[in-house]
Length: 279
Image (tube, rainbow, N blue to C red; front, side, top):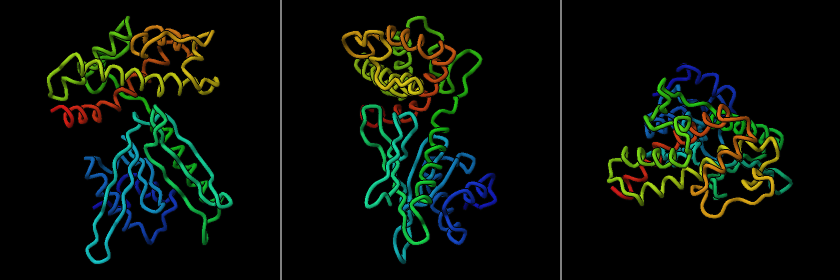
């Protein structure tokens, strides 16, 4: 069972909106969530109470709650990995802006999760919005945290690094071959191509557009002077997209670590998905 004295948990709970008399309840819920994903107290970055527990972890965001009156049980939701998040959206909703919402969106603008904080009782609208913004900042920082790489340039998963390839499209194919191989299923051209395309899309939205946001870049077409992008899927002309993005974003030294980070975070989820669907 977790303790409020485990590492930084005391400070993490103190900074949250959870009342001290409910610490034991939410520590139990958090303990179950960590066990489900084989994580430890050191992987907890932030917690918050909404209608349930929101836990920001080193690998993603999860919600969990305690159900039942007599036979209490903890139900843990799906972990939303940082690699799957393309955008974080904050909203104030009616009536009278009393609901503060945070939406986690995928690269294709699909909604991955939606979390709401509500004003009422002793909780003012500003209090709910402040807690929402605090969790937003923790998630944003965690999603941008660098991933360790080996001296040889390979990522922590053992997959190749983009900096080791002159052709970045070839890198995506090699990375996808490693991914499929690591899943334990047969490496087929169709599976490699499918996941190379997924990787290209993730890089486009989670690296190119995220790094370009401070420059007002919200569409991949903006990386090209005339707004005209090459025909076909992003993977097919990935070398051109990479060169255009690197030219606007500060060079390979800025872009490449973010590419390895995004794909590194996707590794476990995608290998599990391949085993589940093709094993």
